Image (cartoon, rainbow, N blue to C red; front, side):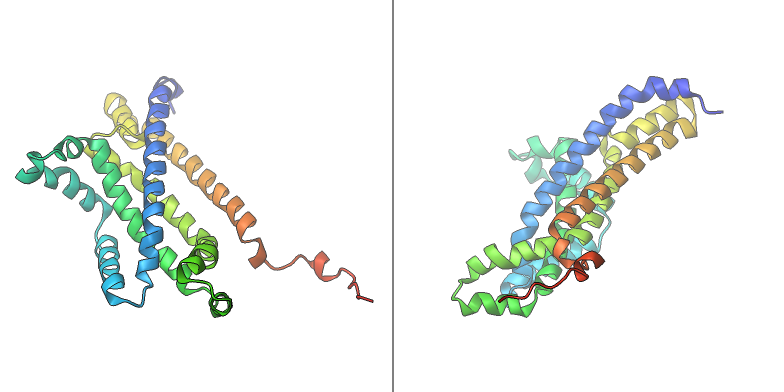
Length: 242
């Protein structure tokens, strides 16, 4: 039988862990999105001196587990004497900073490739139309390419956001008290599996579908022009000009 009294008494801790998880998710995704836009532009550059370093960065980050990256930043950098003796040590000794840095670096790499792929998928007609009116490269990216690419990237970016939300569970490995850490503490105190990990599973389930729902609303708003027209629109009578 499920002991609901344990769940009820632990609920304040679960909500405190939820706050940590949400804050970590939002700041990591925000940082990654801001950094990935210029990196995505650089990734599709025809200049190899600009594109290749970005390719190498995304290749290395996407080729290694996030948990390993977190351990390198949290435990590895602490072994470097130069860092310990510098002003940066006040940041690297904090778990919050290390987790945010690892998550931001990771999601930036994935989002960069998503944006680069969306830029490559831009119809050539849009580029030719912009060039035909004498639009500069900067204005073309600002007014046409990036807005169009960001809209097309929404479905893929929603998967990255959900994946990053699930990945926040590893923050508990470096002392942050997030949802997963609370579940581990409840299990350690009461030795109950369903009441601890079952409860946190419900939290993640609700978070996942809430996040998916938000992205679906965004897609319906900004990708409306890509959806097939409703049958009623097709059957509307044509209006002929006189």
